[in-house]
Length: 446
Ligand code: NDP
Image (tube, rainbow, N blue to C red; front, side, top):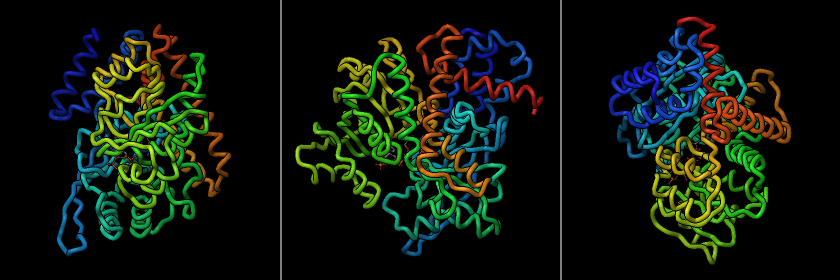
């Protein structure tokens, strides 16, 4: 990046956000790819769009006290970052994981601005979470935590203001507890959260949406390059919500998924992952993925996460967490013949990994485009709640499919317009940025 104005803004970001490397990484990645737009648009510079877009509109940090099953008081820290509302109400998930701190929530909130813009739906960017770990907690403990979390959060959110959703550690159970508490405190039944259960305003296909959407996007990217999922070997990291439904759709589209993982280790199953077993372990029993090897003959479990990227594959779909593929793992993927990587997780590839993909002609579907199907379907859930209607699974799935096709087309076309054909990361950043930038300029210095 050579543009002095952009370098100055980035310097300010670094000074203002010390000790938050993930956020700096996310901003740097976007800046590096939108440089040609900034060069061509002095009006956006004059409107201070970049100076403003890197600063969250509002950040909330709060105490979350709760009592565990033994009667002991526990305290976690809660976060909500309302990053940008230029094109719609704040929207973004809630992450519950011990690694959560301000830098993680900030990077996720920043990414969410561009992702939500790409969906074509009217949603601003936000993210929230807590360092609470739902793993190993009883249902009653999770409920008490969620109720306490919402007892502060409820005053900052609302169906037309800020609509949180799930993320790592926040699934249907947690959303249900949070929704119940919001309803009790506000005495109103509105679409204030998405990812709700079907009986109380959830959308059909929301559970499947991020994983299915990832495969729809990947399918478009493959087709545009003369390839398809048919007969391909796929490695998927994670075994949570995104990974499970990516595995389901990739298999349906003719691929063989040979690996899944969790934060302890990974499974290799040369016969193709048996998804019913994974669902039973992860969705029903909330167990560990190593149990798969005890139930499926011929499969192998290996401790540690990184080794999954040494399994030869045609297509890699990282669906666990940030920075899970580094330069070394990317080089091994390439050496073993992997020609496409599409991101279900947020920022799973380090900058070194991305450079390795681009230098070796690997088709690369960046997170903010490839995993936008989740939030897009959350947007569709908001529409159904506003209309007081429920659409069928097929209707929602078809809309999701079209949105993912359009997102790929927008990335492809923006990359071509700015002379970076085939660089879908640049295309996604440029297309996502431009819509928000125009809205910010039009609304004046706010
Ligand atoms: P889940 O909590 O359902 O699953 C997360 C999976 O990733 C689990 O298998 C988990 O293993 C593993 N994992 C989590 N943290 C780590 C870590 N530090 N190292 C290795 N593995 C880890 O979350 P989701 O499937 O919802 O989310 C996965 C990714 O997708 C995240 O990056 C999220 O931000 C992104 N995403 C999710 C969307 C959604 O709709 N849910 C939408 C868009 C993006 P373990 O069980 O051992 O913790």
